Length: 166
Figure 1 (tube, rainbow, N blue to C red):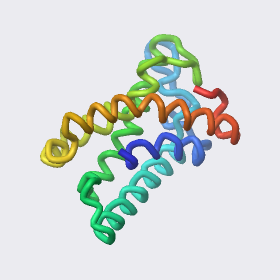
Figure 2: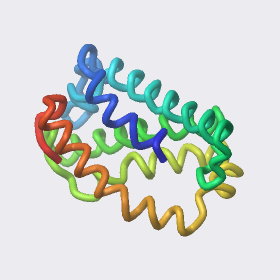
Figure 3: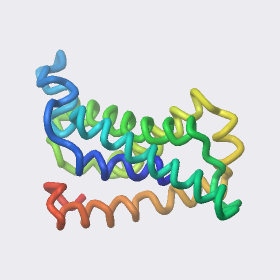
């Protein structure tokens, strides 16, 4: 899941600049996504996820790491892109609910990247998902995701790339 986990953190590091929604409002009078979702963050995050996925592919090949999922270039692109699309869709719904940027939304904040990444893979490359994300792996993803999310956000807060530690 590294190609899906890394993009969110990398987007915070690379973020800033032009918002994806270009400052536009939705029909409810609220921003579509908000200032926290930028082109630079999105593409920097996806690129980071793809790069870590390529490192996984090379490591598995060089060291015979059979315990890792057998990534392909397509699987890492889909996981990285899907993670940030999931985050973007979550932000859209957060704005509809009147939640501000950085405001906590329990469960959605932790699992948006998982749902987005696995759903995009399911839609485009289902055979990879079925072969690699077994039930025990899915259970580990469900258990580890909120723990990793919390730790990474605390680190991001203390190094100054996040405004809040959640």
